[in-house]
Length: 199
Image (cartoon, rainbow, N blue to C red; front, side, top):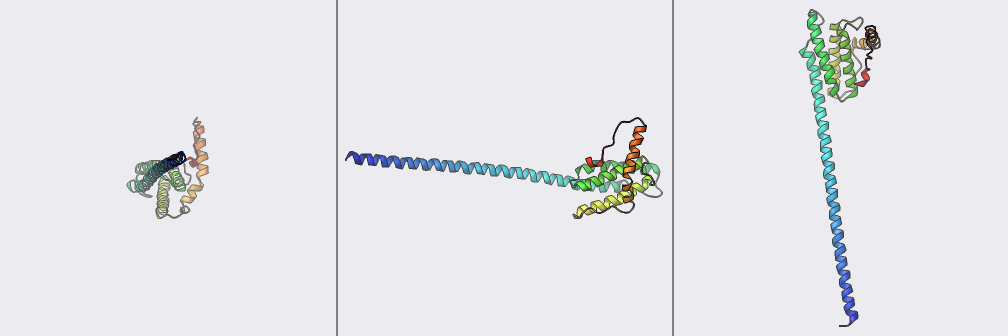
């Protein structure tokens, strides 16, 4: 066999071998890329599942908060007439405590602020700081306002304007806040009551 033929065969073999090697390297890289993409997809799916689970847990807690808020008015009734004063104060205090705690779990910001405001005004009525309205009146109107808001929320409707009576109490809020702040100052307190917008 001539040297030229031997060299040609050897070179051909090397080219074939290198082509095969390159093919295997390419296949290996492709497999690595596919594995990496698969891992990234799995990680993204895991993150989505965690986010979905977190959203579901928050939504469940929000529903529970709505139930607890409505339940507070049922468990601690407020009557406009013929309810002993101590019973009214006890009911209003427990309602206020429930609203103040549960509003933190309401995801809808507008609803959260409206419930925080209701809590604030009932709290002010407990200290006889709502001019022109008694504690039973404020608490009674707050119940109707709360039921209306929660009903709209549960149906997915936009939150409506306040009911008659409660709207007038809401309009008193700037004066109530100013008087309460002055009362604190007159009693030597330097505390500034934070705005409801922080909730």
